[in-house]
Image (cartoon, rainbow, N blue to C red; front, side, top):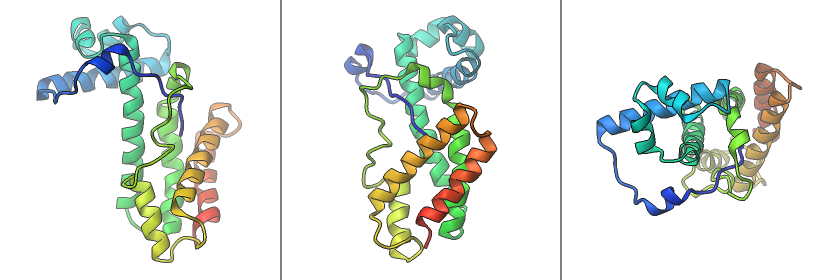
Length: 200
């Protein structure tokens, strides 16, 4: 899955990051959950509509997200978190490399569908943090280990496989978004493509 990531707002650049109290974290999570639901139905929905849906009030919403771009930025961070959770959950279920790759397809497409509304809010100037992974990125770590165990095709560098999986996920999500494939079909085909491309 891929989105055009927004540039960092002035507020985000000037505020130091501090851990939130548990009640403040709950309120922030409630706003983000409401924003996903509301913007998923109406991408142009107002901050007031999001505040109403969150149940925490407009003042609380603006305390956490002084501007709409701050909320959008946090939603893109949620995309990254959920993508990693999708991968982590798939890996935790275990199985052969082929089973894991096949299972990743539908999960990736479902996560992409959940956040599809964010495509209207991105900034092409900002890099997708999942595109160039760090050494500890869960999927990259698994690809490296699985290839070492002989479960993936030799001769393909793990970082290359990661990049190709990312690119295939982008293309598969686009097929679903544009109506060329159903969500279920895109997920199944993506999983099968990953197996054919990388499983030993």
